[in-house]
Length: 319
Figure (cartoon, rainbow, N blue to C red):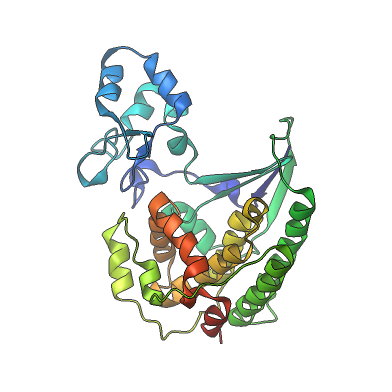
């Protein structure tokens, strides 16, 4: 299998208890089936503690009941994981083992990256001075089973390369690049499938008022937002756009919706301009949105249905 990662991917190291915004606090802790099976094989005090904390969410998924302030029940007073200490990190739930990494499989290719939702990862990508580029490796793992439309996949692959080139074109301003990217995506979408942009009336600021609150700092950012600022022509904005293209663009092979993925990149570039020009702000947005199923599903829907997120309206922010 071919493994594709950003060049900086292996630079990420968790700082554990020193983290300013622990990933073990703020959101639901899912327990995957493989981990649950292992926990059932345990005995003694740890098994009793695990059993006492397991419950079902509204969708029937196994989760750990959170402690006060939405802390994982295994997060101790030193902000270290009691489960990790007792049985090793390899036996923590899948989400805990992999965060902030994301994995996208496309048959014979696996793409891995790190998310802005982690403050350390956010700092890495925000402060990246070289071009956001990628490395490839080949391992012995066989391709994953899939029903990918090969023609669409290779069309998207070549189109994403062009999208990368547009974002990295330093002969144009960041605003010009993003406007060109949106126009390119609109034309590409027309070739792939129908896409009826929405007319739902919602204020642009309300797009960012998520129903599930993870960190109150984000609501303060939204309340204080100023939408009269122009996009900052800076390297961090370029890196943000590249992150979203890498993470989401190729997922259009499954739903034939590439335009919403590119809109996400455009909105990502607007976040520093409107909510705060620093790595912490894009981290807060990512943690609130990308890592909440409720918030992310709402956001994906709005990308198609909200009139303020139509291509023409988004382009106005870059003029």
